[in-house]
Length: 106
View 1 (cartoon, helix red, strand yellow):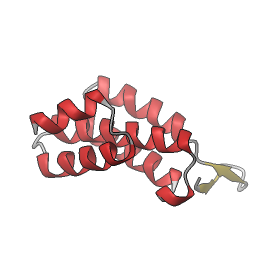
View 2 (cartoon, one colour):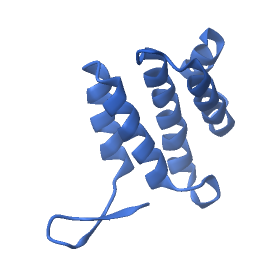
View 3 (cartoon, helix red, strand yellow):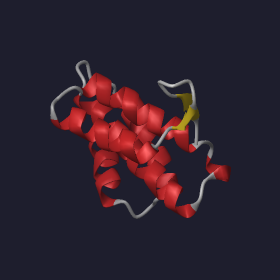
View 4 (tube, helix red, strand yellow):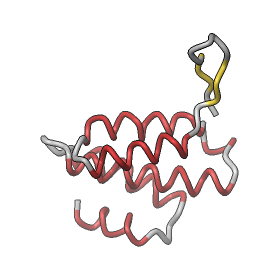
């Protein structure tokens, strides 16, 4: 996970689950641009796949799928990026039905 400097100057670990939760709230509120930024930050905080645990791979698949939704909802929509995220998500979790539907619809 990534580390960022906290308000006291100490290093704080970036929690991808908290970022996902915050992004989900923004998504529900229709702020897709801000949600995209937080989903991306959460994905980046998890690091590359070879360093991920099975739990973090599942989280990463979910984050990619959620970010794909945000790319589709944002105006103008970016279906190319959404499709890329769906493909990446399905490589990590090939049984994710929501992602399969998004991929079919793009």
